[in-house]
Length: 415
Length: 215
Image (cartoon, rainbow over all chains, first blue to last red; front, side):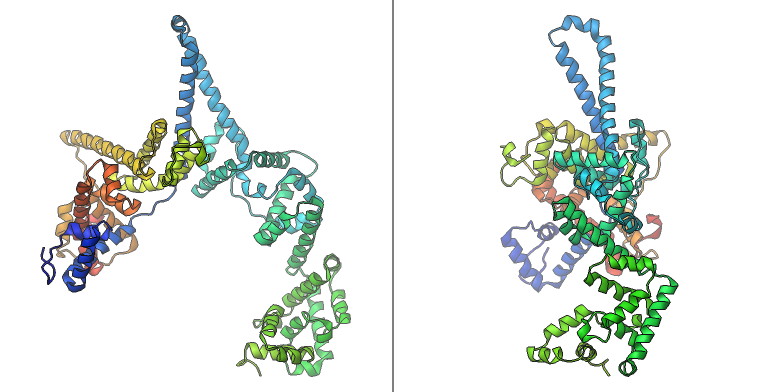
């Protein structure tokens, strides 16, 4: 086919080879030159390429867990048959005269052996299912003694159980005969997860497998302590705090120390969760406290567009820079009921301050009207200023510092 | 198992071939990994080769049983994907041949059933644009491409699928299909030109070539 001004002929074979990167380099350079000169050739190439790209419309490849499972079962059955054959051919080798006599018996015993081996592997799988069905939760516990230690963490169930997410696996079978139907009855995503967890489990060190089995047995055991609940609560808590903090906690080898850290996390999460459980009386008390503060500092709040947000911001400042003084904090705490106060008493000072701020924030509707400038954001703005400007701000009263930083953050919105 | 335990593994052997060498030593985990990796890929290619989802599933199983049975004789002389797709193309060819014989028998008995997909000639007539057209949605587009692929002959289709979805080179496709490189080159060229002809109305205007034939 004549396709350019130089008279070079390019057939479809060559165009296809070019698209597949299979054209010799010399021809490739020549074809590229022809393409630059010949619009018709470019169009032919483009049409071939577009038709090729349309193949992407065909259904994508997806994992079929049912098919994978049944293939493995087929291979396992073949393996059992193969072993049965090997066992009996080895034993009867050189005893041909016995063959006739024992053939009937051998068949019976061989079939029994195959059945036994099949049953045995099925039983092993059934034994493993409680581990696989709770694999993600069990993988959080590195040793049964850690699960036992977790029972000493006060408030763990209360903090973690509401956050627990069920694995989605129905009750796993207790008999090998039920295994096949149970797996077949699972939704496809669960079947895939089961396979993936099985692979992850198989990749574990033998000691880790053993400890996971032990934890699983402890969870299933009937005892005075409901370890299953403890595991669920811990799982819920871990998923709430995220992987970074969990990795830090898990790095602590001393179980007592680790439990003490978990205890702090539990108190913190309970305190955070309490923001949603504040009673009407407590919320009303917080609003009265805020109104009282506004009345006391009428001159200051008079010029503030959004006084509720300002109060929330003030709770973040050191008392020297804030109009919210320690006695105000005490007054605020007194407006919280015994449960809330009890939670506050378990927190360290920094956590207590943050918690109170959250409770006030959730109770003052005005504080949620606009995106607030957090203390972290304020600090970032402060750090970005020249040192001379920072020195000026350090000696300013707190409200003035906040106003200035807000102005820097959003000059157009500032008064 | 590490490479040390398999002295025959040399640098350059793909990871799947290494897995297969573990399977050779009855490593069930390695077999399972290969199964999970290749099952969807085989399913996609076989589905197009035999034009039946359920038959493709059976064939995938057949391929993996053959892989298991052949494990002791496995030698990593080529890419693993080339080897497994060689098995797959053989299995699919046998299945299509068997099905052909069955249909011949049914036709002789006066029980001929219409085949799914659009014959090449029909697609070509449709591409003249004489038939009413309408815009395609995504499902219809997939059906149209499916029909175009089915309109290719089996060897063109196999070469096309291995090239498109498995990124096999001409040499690897030749190994998988038991053909010469020149034959593969020719097959792929004809497959792609036919595909361009069949899909031209859509490429030009985004229209369905012929509604009836895709139903």
